[in-house]
Image (tube, rainbow, N blue to C red):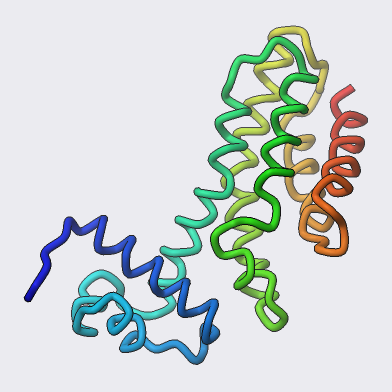
Length: 187
């Protein structure tokens, strides 16, 4: 029996199953046939949505990046009374989510460093403008006096990655290190 689904629902279903299989079998060992089988559709249907396995992967990684950074973006766009209130919310969200992300195991698996680097770049590129706007907004309110919000936001976003991605550190250790640097930059 054929089940018809909205295109975005079907695309998401295909992407979720593909990422699950990439986690289980590895990217290289997973075929479009495997993905179609997991979704319970014919392979041609997957190709209606994605020209290749790599295009499917790019779609899935972008969805995942959005899911990971949305809580941070929501905080950055909020209206808190103080800079410390923002810091506390960001730390709480990070500690609650670190290592528990949907596809954490795939991106942190030995041999998947390039996939992880792709994810890191996508996430950083997406979140950097929000941090820049955050700094500009707090400058206007008189809570910050950052002369070059663009450069500082870039330094914060791209500079924190090695610390945030260091699995030898606990989430608390990561936030302590990153937040102490951010506080120095945003004085």
